[in-house]
Structures are given as structure tokens and as C-alpha cells.
Length: 124
Image (cartoon, rainbow, N blue to C red):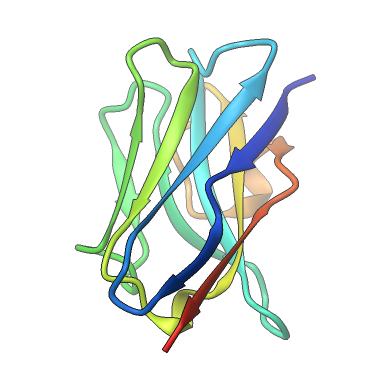
């Protein structure tokens, strides 16, 4: 069982930046693809970005391309989501998810493990 913990959410003004972190409790992310998803009030969960288990492939939703960056640290203990030029429409609960030996898909159904989420609020 992999337990994921997100952190780094908060309130920021439009145009600002936040960095979200996702850590796997008691283990590393070695061998896991990790994705970030978000869900705004009254909307369905949507894909944001993902990184393959080799870190060689990264994918981004069109709405965040050029503003958000996914990365993982060398020790494989955390995956980060750097969010720049934030917009009010980025307001949502952000979830990280992991899939063993994953190719980093956009489908949430592919991921076996999910965190509890962290709230990101962007004020205008």
C-alpha cells in the first residue's frame, strides 16, 4: 500500500506561484509514474500533468502548458508541481496519484494510489 501526502497548497493572487509537493509515506517513488489532477467545485476531476516512472516522459494539460512544471527529486522521495502565472481558474483541490511502472497517462483510472488533496485558491 502506498500512501501519498500532498502539501504546499494555499491562497495566492493571480499571477503568483506555488509549489506543490507529493510524498510517498514510508517509501520512494522509484518505479512509479506520478500524476497531478485537480477538481474545482462543481466540476469533474481533470488531468493536470504526469511524469513517467523513468522521468523521461512528461505530459501536460493544454490549460497549464507553459505555466506548470512537474519534476521529481533525485532521491525519488518527492514529486513537485511548480505552478507559475496562476489564474483564478486554477483554483481547485489538487491531488497526486501514483501508478507502479506507469507510463504517465492522463486517465485517472490508471492510477492505483491517491493522496487526500491540497487546496489551491487563486484570487483575482
